[in-house]
Image 1 (spheres, rainbow, N blue to C red):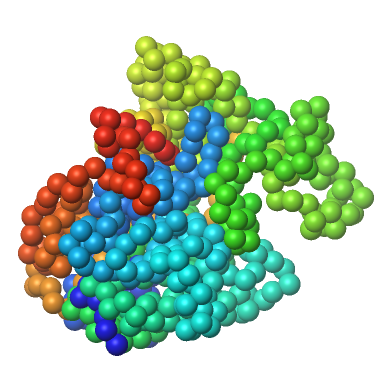
Image 2: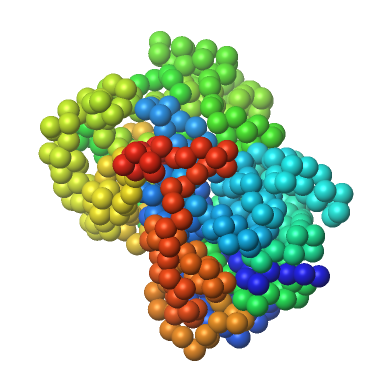
Length: 538
């Protein structure tokens, strides 16, 4: 089998504390072998350290201010859509390699739908729909004919009560096997110079099963087995293992940021309406193969919103159903969005500031001439933002400790043509030990319902034809793209924010010109003074 010169393997949420524990019990021998013959270090993730923004940062080498994606959703005023590759306004590793006549195979990498038209093959992954369009057209049919079934998402719905955890993990492991088989088939077919395959369930096992360790062991062992098969079959010159962020226990509070803003007089709430982005209905739509960016209220949700405005909320209905002892029967058939539609929501037009989505880790101001119904005049912007920063910096947990590690203006974290789409204030929880929520609540602090979640230190491993004696001190997510290109002796884009790690010789950078989308249209922001374009869900 032919294989890539450089193999990049993504392990979502992979991190050394998790792998060290798995290694001690012998569950990841192939990852251990790569670490033993190479170099490894914690890979510092970006802010925000979440999949939809971090993987594009990794594969483009630029911060969200340059590529434009800050979370699962992008915004047009107060409306939102699910992000995809068209929202990533920056050149990927495989685009640069194509300019040097180097082919690529890219399998299951998040935020690659719709696929780029490249020299090689792309099978999109997470946040794309089930049965995604691939490149070249018809590729998914070829993959299925060659290896059998291929799916992006599990065949079951999360929370499905009729399926055991054992059966769900069997589906997790089947998905890992599909990634490996598809990648090996495409490498044999394309003979690429570069290969990139990503495994997603290593992250979701923590979210769906609250970090239950026997289940973590099973999906990591299955992933490790596929990594070993890929390395053996492809025999790459260089293998790199990377992650978009780490994972760990959250021992702190659930902090309702919008409730803090409401208590300080910056935010108003309402009942009815669309409310905050929610991953549950979006995930269900993607599993059904629905790639539509726009989510509109269903007829049932519109009725629920109308009833909420006259006081008949989902909470009140729930109490009535409980009294009648039929709540379980009704909710089994109730659309997911109905309870949210009838609940208390942020009144975006009436507020001065709000957290749009928790994974953005920030507060957005409702600025006049920027938002449709802005309430903060441009000449008041700096003063209001300073007030909010001061207020949040002073917030303490019920135990009397600072709630946040960092509360800073967005320009202290991001830079680039899409800075205007970022939250105006970046808010990082203390030690990433508190869960930030955008849901309005009666209290700013509540017991945390999420025992495992994202941490910034991830994973970097490099083995093969690299300088394994070199220091790989403090590698950053943004260093991966230029280092991959350097390992292939290809100049990296001078717009990249990362550096070439010392394990590869630096080939220098060059200007590849303004980024152009897959359809050939130049990004207006890149041409016109690099101005704005984009910006999760609860």
